[in-house]
Length: 234
Ligand SMILES: C[S@@+](CC[C@H](N)C(=O)[O-])C[C@H]1O[C@@H](n2cnc3c(N)ncnc32)[C@H](O)[C@@H]1O
Image 1 (tube, rainbow, N blue to C red):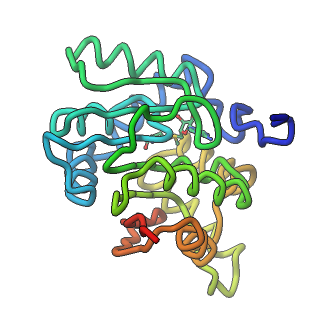
Image 2 (image 1 turned 90 degrees about the horizontal axis):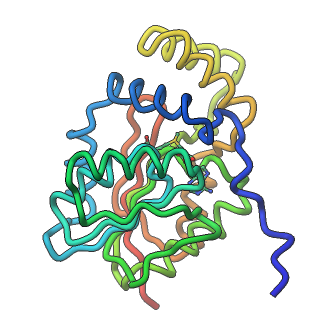
């Protein structure tokens, strides 16, 4: 079938995650700013991970979540559209002697998918790389590869819709990021607002519903929102 109309998800928008140097900087910055083990714990609980569980991570970046979950489950299939990210994550897996993770080039819309229906899926700070129409397509593809009643942990930057003044809202957001994470992260946030496709919370929630998920829990922390979802089975 002709797929020339498919969105080119390998084209970098905003931050360039295809650049090796940028990937190393990203990893260092995230290790400094985030509490990785707390994030892994949260996702493991949300996805009810056990030694029998299989997980698919989409947009795995430098691999911290996949490697953390691997210690608690049977297998993690971790995919990303950036070959530089995949190379970096594979190196980490080798260094840490983790064998139950498959890091493969693959996106929300195309490329590698798990060879078996998975029990859980996780994606953090990645779906905003796709315009809204393609977000729905992406979520449907995730649903398709989940077992019935399988779970999805989706975390991303979504915007509230009841904001009276977006100039003031974005200025406040950038100032908060600058004081918490420094100038580089503030610059990335500016590029994010200008070039990437974060959407409104209500659109995200309707898209989850339209792709066959029910949202069982939702948590907003600073500027990211996490949705814990169960794939409905007709
Ligand atoms: C902001 S980073 C987040 C990485 C990681 N999930 C984390 O929380 O640190 C976004 C990642 O999504 C990847 N990405 C962008 N578009 C994608 C797509 N359509 N499918 C899969 N991964 C994508 C990028 O290459 C990058 O590694």
